[in-house]
Length: 157
Image 1: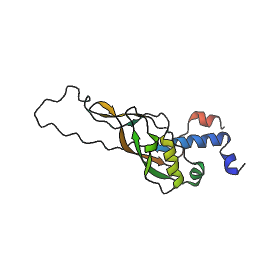
Image 2 (image 1 turned 120 degrees about the horizontal axis):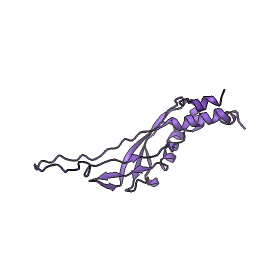
Image 3 (image 1 turned 135 degrees about the vertical axis):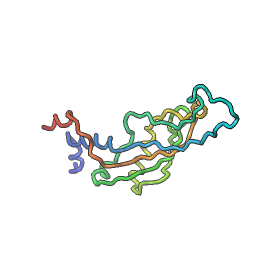
Image 4 (image 1 turned 90 degrees about the horizontal axis):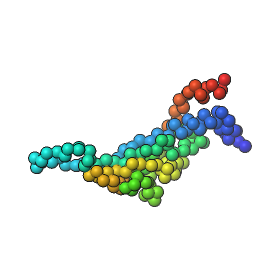
């Protein structure tokens, strides 16, 4: 077993893996077609949200992306922008996932692409109805210290 593999075992390894989960950020950026203003003088709808267009919204409780351990240990960071298509049920269509702009590190790009299949969304809406939509999803691999908690420190005394 290599020294790196031993280092990621035990308490220190569990904390490092927890840090990995918390350091892959998921940001939702999408473009929604603009809806033109009414110029016919008609009164607005009583429920302003009924006809509102909305982009898909990620509903995962935890990030599905895995920071490659070797890159994390080396301090390699980066941002990958994925192009995704989410259908009208909020499911990512895996064969539509593409790296729109890479991080410059192929392993980060691959980790982002692989993690995309684990994303779950509330679907986009057009005129209040769920629709499929293509959009860009940034995935940020950043090496920040995991927040400490009393549970983590109590076991290490």
